[in-house]
Length: 190
Image (tube, rainbow, N blue to C red; front, side, top):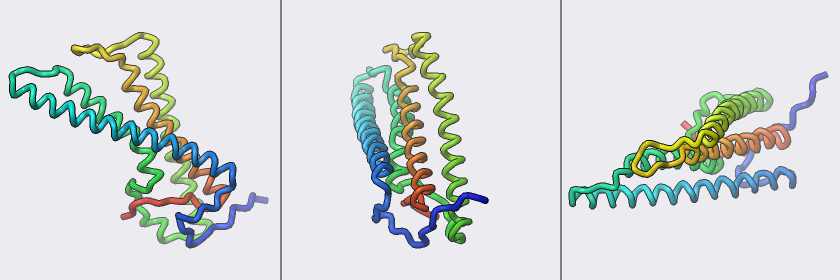
């Protein structure tokens, strides 16, 4: 006999919270971490903007910080990875629903499960490799070759943090899909 799939709600409203208490607690932890990462990301964006403005002003006087390009490069990568989990949770990521909109019931559940599990698998794979890179850079004491030598494990660990938070968000969605019957998707759709 095959295990029964949870009952699928056809018209789930994303504002209705029907999670069990334990799942709600895990989701709240994920939300707190995602929002914290988004605040760090926004703070980095403001800092990068100020740094670029400083660089512009300094160049008017024929001088430079000599680090703006490097720091802004690290910052762009960091804000992308750190803001992604919050964007996924808040439905700010574009999701193509051409297939899922045509499905209902168990077929839709299966497609959702496949999408979430493969995405989570990719995030886990990337996070494992990123962790290996962070630990190698830390163990070797590798630093950037710029005016200010930045330990390379610092920007790399920001990428790792974003990947782990994305993975956690996907795990929450996967558990919600299995336990409640829907993934509580709130995404921009095409």
